[in-house]
Length: 195
Image: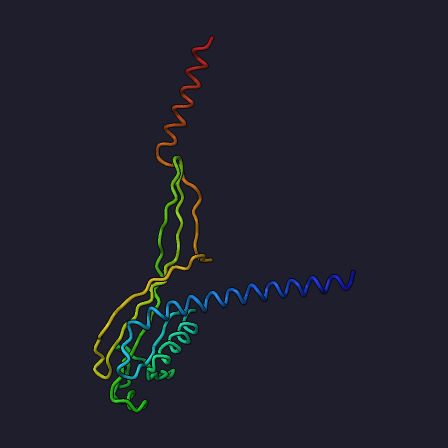
């Protein structure tokens, strides 16, 4: 009996490990697909600075996108933690580019915007709505040091099975109370007339 209990624990741990591995593989595949579509929009004629701000997708997407661009032979430069390329930056762009030893570069900013899609499931008497997340990756490409916007594209991604989706309770259609009232009136009429 005591030998059987540790075997069950080991089996449970192995099953959890397999589930975690499958989830990690699925997320890596999804990030590779997103990176493939984003890489098509990036110009590689100048060195590329990647600025990825995608929440939980940032590490996987950064790794996949860097791997794809390096396979193309792109000169990629890492952004330091102090480098911010926005309109409120206090550091002149020419000084930032000089730190990297560049006279010009393409800055690629990838931001994640979460949108929701409402899907209605209809039947004759009732309907329900389902809310699914859509991850919209906005890709902006700027030419530095001029800070000239050269490209803007979006890539929408909706995971097949999302833990964030929600389904509402079934709702009645507007005419169902009328049908129920008519049925009740018919029963009362039949009971009244049968004597």
